Picture 1 (tube, rainbow, N blue to C red):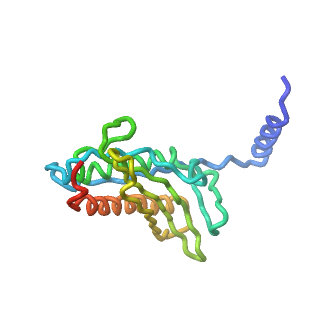
Picture 2: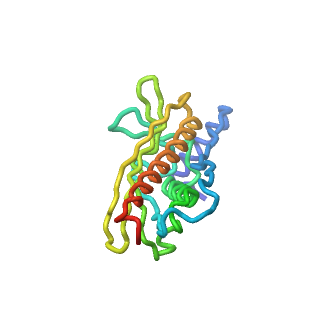
Picture 3: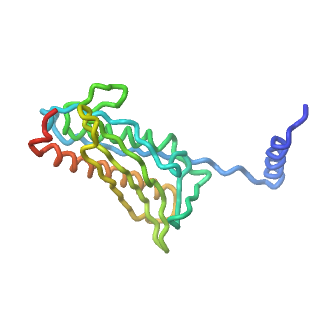
Length: 207
């Protein structure tokens, strides 16, 4: 059996590693996952509204599972051996649903389009999810654009881009991931406050 050129190259690299006593670096996988406490005793929700949450999108740099780091607005770089365990879009969508369910703001919070009979639809785009290096300081940077759509009119009725930067105690992927988790939680919490204020207005409080 003959090897093609690509296979031969991979075999040669592995052979050099073995002969030199080297080893392939360990792969590390990370989650966006944090505990969410219920904000009520399970009483009546603040608004008799069914909120659908659509699957979030991501800007091209943040679509794949490798962690991103940047020290320039014009260049994105990846950590090759430090990755999200699944797509950031999926993890953030799940946390949005979890946090809003725990908030007791709405009668129901459901995944869209699995459940299509919703009054309003919350959707968003991940604009940044990264390590941001600025001089001798490192930040976990999260920026998400949120949109609220009134289904009856199929019209965007509220929109905001929220950014959070949390200082990392050291330049290491685990510390950056810790800061990103906090940033995601802070972004969603701010959206909760914004929508609570929006639906508190008399003209917006009904279906």
